[in-house]
Length: 348
Ligand SMILES: *Cc1c(COP(=O)(O)O)cnc(C)c1O
Picture 1 (cartoon, rainbow, N blue to C red):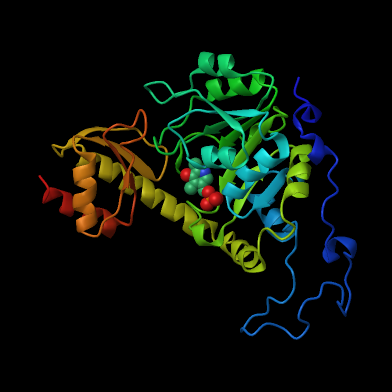
Picture 2 (cartoon, helix red, strand yellow):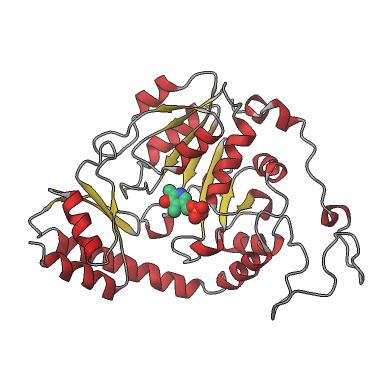
């Protein structure tokens, strides 16, 4: 049985969080002289002289409507990368605990584990880029606190089989973190609706990809109230700044625009797959549920350098295990994709 008290670090269990001026007085007042802010304003057209809402309630209320989960089950971070770091800091004892990663996958899990001095157990995906359930079961020990599953996966683009993810959720007494950064591009259902089913589930999403707000740094974690409460205690008090909160709130009103872009990206993804597969240097294109495709080529470095010379940058993933020969290509605008395809024609 999952019990958060079995995985919480002792120091975090006992942590008294920082109490800000806005934590200590929450009503409405006419004169605020409690936070050492500049009472005159900001040297800008818009004022940012007041500290932002530490718990980002307005943004969460809007997200709650869109995602169908109560605000108390939502954590917001300075990108989902911050949520990843906070999970390590909350649940993993440096030098003692370990995490299971299933490469090839998103690089930040490993970096964050290393920063926090958490041992990593690698259980590579199968040749089909699916979970190795036996390997994961064997790797779990008493100090395993987190398992990261990225679905749709970066850099391979595919989604993990849902039953496999549920098997991990049902059989692991630590946290299973499902990173859904690319879920908006996927035919698969989000795991957010399973929060009531699995107390050990954390779902990560972000405004950085489909929502087109990578520069604002707003990431989301969805989990049980008790997990969210811990993450809120551990996070820096003002981790999402006022400009980001205001702009995110505004952007969340434009969901139709985002859905149109998603449709366009999927059309363009199909187009890239269709046209790229006829190039001689293309060996394989992996099925993608994301806004990028992984393309196996005969000469990744040569193609990469050729494209760089033409001012087009893709990602060389050929040094990554199980991605030998592969370039990761983000789906661009129709014009950008045309430029890419035209340029590649000159290469053959
Ligand atoms: C891009 C990406 C993120 C996004 O991180 P942010 O910090 O929210 O920008 C998270 N996970 C994966 C797998 C990604 O590819």
